[in-house]
Length: 465
Image (cartoon, rainbow, N blue to C red; front, side):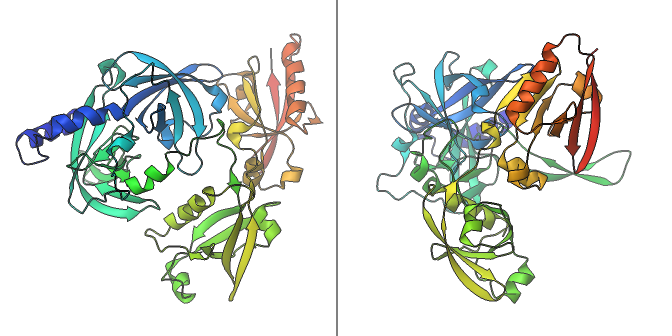
């Protein structure tokens, strides 16, 4: 797939009917210095898995941004090891440091010592100098960079396309007619000005026909290595300095409205809200800033700090807009939330809090003999389990090793462990102490776990011998 677009692009370039061929060597030679390949390892319970992402250099200090999908959200930062950064087209690498993930953009930040990897050029060097980022026109020709695999020394290649649509998703993004860059890598115009960063592409729907069956089966194909979608530079450049203060990305502003849903078009029309954006609040979380301020379940959010929510298409992206606006704030900030409750409008001042501990921050402990990693039960688990956080005791089965004693007994990943050997597990430390004693007892033949899954509770006998 990559070679096909690579060859098409080259044919177009040198046939003189695409980008000005005289410009390409000069533009390419400098802009490819802004892209890197980043390798790392994830230290899981039973294996050490390699990871790979492509990134863009954003400053002279060697700071690199990787796309949000570079790291699984379930992975704790302390499981990320041995970051190595490669220049495009080079096999040699130098160590990198993981800085954390930004909650607003979703980017992961990595830093490399510029002295150890000289020649990197920040993408800002190719941004508009007058402060106004260029916005491509419909059908305008654009080009970007892709990287081959490690066994090809991450050799860079060019992709060329045209802009088919510009839309707020909720970031203003361009959608090209076909793939134009690898996720996380830049896109440029004909003059070499930075236009935006590619993100994971949309799936494309196809119909698959069979010779033996005249019916057609719909399928969706997603290109993981190349993308046709790129948020515009105006949505990228203002945020490249949001380097996390710690690997967990804290502090994180928290409102506590759960399940934001766009209004049904007919409901919006009935409420005379079809000319603006609006989202309904499915639930206000227990003990949250929203609850303390007086926001209620089923309130309809109309505006933030006096600014009406934009009318976006599809309407589902309005919820993403609200989440992004919240992420721009800090704990302790005051936010004016305008809501519609029944037929009445209310302006509610909310003092944002610091988001409760996330799953990636939760304490974890692996027990090799049992084949089980338990995880501290955090606020988000209580929400998912539909219980009050003050009443949520126990731990979560974070990882269950296949064919292990606990797996054979019937325990699954994400099961809620409430009791061990008939004793209620109140805290993570309680569970660690109980399971550590069981694992250390070599004469122990079995033990019992009481676990809940999907509202159903079961007693599981775990045989150790």
